[in-house]
Length: 395
Image (cartoon, rainbow, N blue to C red; front, side, top):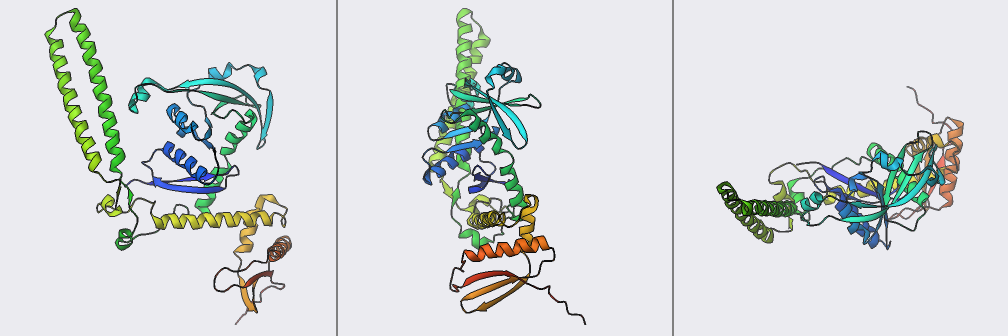
């Protein structure tokens, strides 16, 4: 079994909104469409999606444009093409993460090759007019292109969104891997697997792909027959007659294969049991319920921590180590004591004065929120820092 991919859809600040876990056999572009559909379900009538070059495809752009706006790096755009954009077109400056950029824009029609269309089972190549936003690094003079179908946002906003794609989202994944065990896969036993929901049958896309490839081959063979017949009309040639006959036989064989595949497609179930899919192999897919629930809990923990970080910013003025200091406070040992309907949480003494004062201010802000436990024990929580160091006991 191959590995799995986790696709996280984040907001502009890199915070996750939701995620999908799929086999890495699944192409990236369907996941973008799936994200757009999910955002629309959540009430965003026309979402704007920012993604990398892996999602670049002209025909896909046309389909996605029917429901969403998109921003992505421009592919197949030579440096010479970008260099021909006049200097006076760069009319707006943009400062982003200690770098200065100048921004320009123009419209450009992009078109896929006919071979790309045929490989996808289509007879004609797709084309589309897109907005090309170009950013120029003031220091290096390097130019980079961005494609978008959005025409209402200012071009400097488009540049900012694309630049924001780098950094925050990567940092999010690094933090989720390091702190929240995002790559952890809970174990399964056979009895649990038997109770899991059915999964998408992986044979379906393989059969459809085989049918598309065979149909493309039939078209190519038919084209070769037309060429050979044209040559035969100009001069008689037994070798051409034999070649045409062989080509017809090949077409007949491939059409028979297509009929068999199409027949198999009608009898192949859309969903199957994970045990049927594994067929005795080790568990490899991570999109079962236990993994999804585990990841969901980790994402909830991530958001809870981010909320605590925002509260802690009012208590600690050194932005360089806000998270490490917060982690030191929230993971600190201590004691609890239930008095009446209040559960007192008393964390151990903190030696360093700056950190201790920040922790005390943090506890004060939390206590102002009157936090209560959810469940059978509905008690109020009250957080405090011990006023004295814990005394060690020596024998």
